[in-house]
Amino acid sequence: FLKGTTLVLGVAATPLSSLVGCTEYTAPEGTAWAAGVRFGDADCAFGPDGSTVEVVFDEHLVRRYDAGGSLRSIVGGMGSERGELNGPGAVAFDPSGDAWVLDLGNRRVQRFDADGGVVAVADTADDDRPLRPSDIAVDDQGRLWIADAAHGRIVVTNDRGAPRTVFPLATDGDAPYRSPRALALQSDGQPLVATHGKPVIERYGYDGELRTRIVDEGLT
Image (cartoon, rainbow, N blue to C red; front, side, top):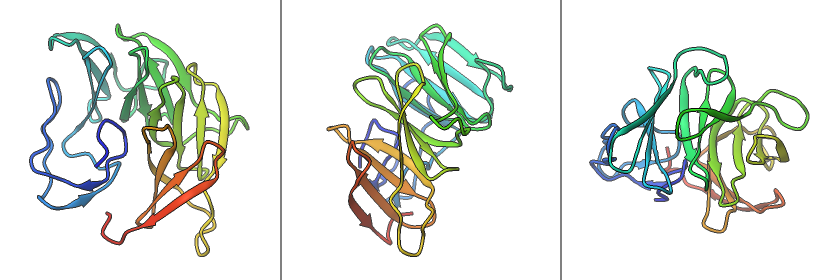
């Protein structure tokens, strides 16, 4: 499977354990699983400086630990104001060490620095339609990639959350409208997208053109 991204594909081992502050995740041995599946109540990411960010969905909180395991900051709390969260989901570090957090209930993505300050917010695409993000990833240039489930597209922003590129998912004969479920970036920066409704993984180019479609009835 691809590790260190928001999209995980392959065969799950048991157990899958994370580091300080994160829930120990388990899945049935040999079970195929894909992105968006979270075992336990937390999602975690590990930063370039060795720090750990833990997102706790049910408590609407984000906790950050330094490389030594000491608590650095806690942000969030139920709400819709800047810095508050409503059902946080995926988390991804950018190259500077800031953490982008998917704020599901508020339909946005917020960028937090190491001390818990809000640096940027992404909540619209270039057509000003509100996002409904289902997953996120960050590339090595600091750009934020957002799977926009409501509008069947991928939105790419700059490091301040301003939209720069938008491309729709490729149509499928019997499914002209398709919703992205999960997103990851390959080592070359090209996106992989998993969709709702069908066991399909797609690879796109930087230009938004579909390159490869993988259909696997074993994926769940």
